[in-house]
Length: 326
Ligand SMILES: [Zn+2]
Image 1 (tube, rainbow, N blue to C red):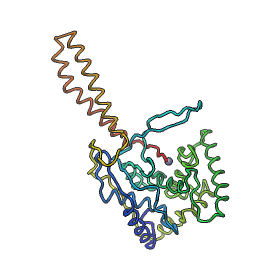
Image 2: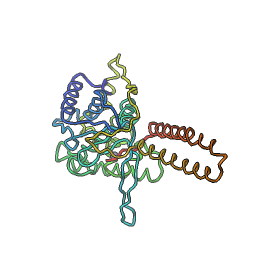
Image 3: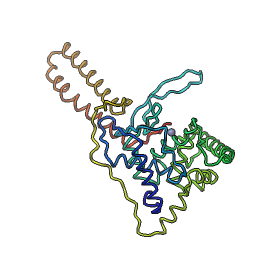
């Protein structure tokens, strides 16, 4: 995507990235090692959204960005039909946390950067929320360049959102990610991902919304694609998964990171060890001759089970697609 920009746009983007990197602090969670590549990958994608804004905001609602190695768990509060608030844990790829923290999963950031045509990009998603909430509301209405645009935006956006919710509820296969039917804010964030990554189909399916986004973002991804195809010799770079991601369980001292999927897997493995030890103790008391065999299983077998369990949790965390929250 970066390579499809004109030279002038690239220069402008580089300028935005410098400001972004100066203003925002980054922290690695769970022992994740922050490198220039991590900072740049996030900054470039975040600034892509504001590339052509006349007065780019540089996301004043975000002062720090926490980066986990993979998807992580956060508490989610949902109101039941009876009006009570229920807390549950959800595994997510990105989330705005407290007032000024934004948390991202590096494996999902990388996936978004590596595949810029699948309509999924967690950085676009989370920073689209930031553009949306600049006026104080997560409602799918960002601050528009002209006052006269609000009425038009509201009419088109509401119509498209309601149409999408109806299609989603009726089980119709939708082009946009179904997560967009959660609420207007998610519809805006999900639409942003598809607008930049799958502009052609987006325009075919949601022509009016495409025009709306074109004016807001001051970008026309279809026109950019066409001009980049015309200029020959350009090949899109691919990001490779860096080998330095290892799975440590240390927390940075300066930040309190919410529990990650990996942390919870460690808790689960401790639980398995506890149960196995209890079984061993019970059998040892009731049947002494089995003690040696069981001891061997407890010492070696349980460790093997724990490693296998951890491996499965890590593999599933990397392979699943997780939702993104505001
Ligand atoms: Zn979201």
